[in-house]
Length: 250
Image (tube, rainbow, N blue to C red; front, side):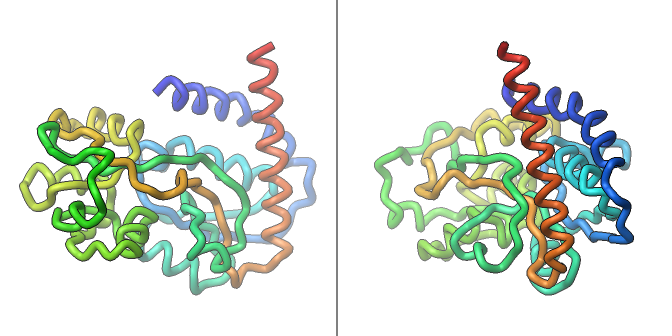
């Protein structure tokens, strides 16, 4: 939680610097359609406005690139399909997996996450539980998300798919699923701020998948000029972040 708050503070400090830097770049008549899902707390609506750490970061990168854009929020499966098939689409926060590596033009990493299967506190599941044993459980997961794809690759059939990650907690409370994949820190924040009773849900089993790195990425049909312009801005923003972190330490 402390790391999350520190990240938010650093992003706020960067805002004025990035906006000023972006004005030094020549204006381009470029409009990018940015698509995402609502995924608390990294990108979510508050008082009708999309906010969150990931949202702020993406907006800073596009401002530094002097790119015109519109952000639209969809169910993840629809946003993902648009990024696969349409030109000038930027999607976030997208996990970079081996299966997706050649399907997008990647800009850069936003953050990384580790996923666990959450279940009842009195469960017999532990780190030594086999995948074969786990397959008997009903698991709720976001369709086309990285955990969903991991479970499919490992022959899990008993999956209940949802549009938003927070819906899995509701499915668990209603008795429709037994387990759900989630990241520890974001799951705790979601439960607290959405006023969900997650007291009986604990991380039981770490999914044997690489730490999920969340990226911003363009559709393959996007012009390379736009992609390179945004990549350059991304490097500018992350360098400014690194400098601020060093200053705060020293």
